[in-house]
Image (cartoon, rainbow, N blue to C red; front, side):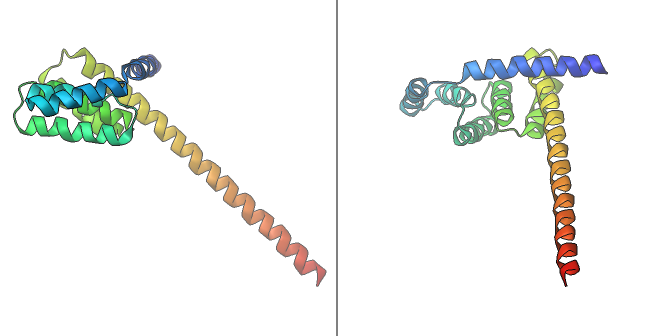
Length: 163
């Protein structure tokens, strides 16, 4: 079990590095947006949305998901690539459950997809890390609350003893 967790963590680190390096520049996004608007073809739209799915801006990531999901609904021929792009955007938005679900859909139809498998493993590792962080936050809040009650008790006791 430890080996699997280590593998997931390693894949997560590598994927995070890849996605950081894949973040598009403003110039590339503008060029692709102009081209998509000018051509109006599904291929040009896909190129723009797929590039947008690696953005560092949450609004752009949500827009990429909307476009890519629309292409899938319209029956665009590269549906698996659209689903992968959406999964990447969801991962970058820290919506690990939805990203993992998209990866699982891809892996059901294309079990050999290395990219989907890598993203799936990173989603699992990220979700576990997020849950651990949430537990730590709850524990910290609980400790602070107990301490505050204790301090209030000491202050109340001191005020009562002065009377």
